[in-house]
Image 1 (tube, rainbow, N blue to C red):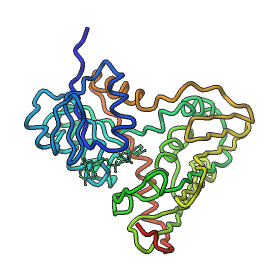
Image 2 (image 1 turned 135 degrees about the vertical axis):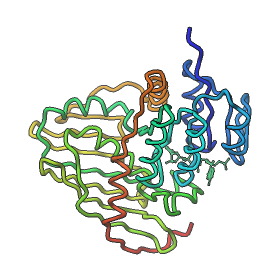
Image 3 (image 1 turned 90 degrees about the horizontal axis):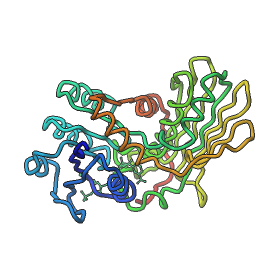
Image 4 (image 1 turned 120 degrees about the vertical axis):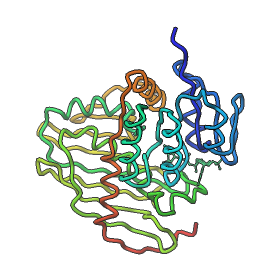
Length: 309
Ligand code: NAP
């Protein structure tokens, strides 16, 4: 049997504990040997306060999974790639599109794999939705991605700071699904960003896009929503409506609910990372981040009341 790839995780916070550590423990292709985090540590492995200390003490580590907020992604990824490690990036893959493209070029030059993950693309609705839509004419698309920020991001300051994306932090998950399931590319034509007077990033956003066949693609993101979140995508086609609900856990086609299996987004991501390393390939799709960047580029900013963070 082949030896497991020695892996380290950097940035031990909510998503590392909720998803990455359990998925790695269940994946025989990886062996978690070390972690780096300024304050947190993980039982049963060697712990370091930052990635540089980890890299100099652990020359046998072959792959690094980065789970800290996007503002520090580039520096951490660069250090890992320069040390010759394969790298997996949490979403969003960076705080800017250009830094992700630069990382991709560096990974290619070093001959290591770079995997820019989009966990929502691994939700069960996505593959059957993509397959069904492949042969349909798209008439219109509406995305509604709304949740209560105080419930889903309690105490997180980085989401409100430049590069933290604000409401696009969840909204980019919807964009990662839309760019995966639609048969055509989409282009941003306009946006409205609603920004509290005391934050650097938006609390709500409306995006106005068009696909290459001319179909309108509209997205509504809102962090002032509750108590029940709405993570929904409706695609109207010449053969009826396809609806994704609960962020990809439910799919209905022309009114018929489709049976989907149990959620396994993060196990699927680690399987793919392993396969990419074995086949010496990359997977870096910046399109969801590009649309967000375009919204910041084109969007009309509307100030709203202070959030009180
Ligand atoms: P988080 O818990 O706020 O942050 C993760 C950890 O990163 C923190 O606990 C912190 O650990 C470290 N960190 C924070 N700021 C840092 C800095 N400036 N420099 C170095 N390390 C820093 O955030 P999260 O919810 O896990 O999200 C992290 C990433 O995963 C984001 O890109 C997010 O979009 C993505 N994600 C989150 C979720 C979710 O449900 N939360 C779901 C999918 C994807 P130390 O203090 O120990 O260094």
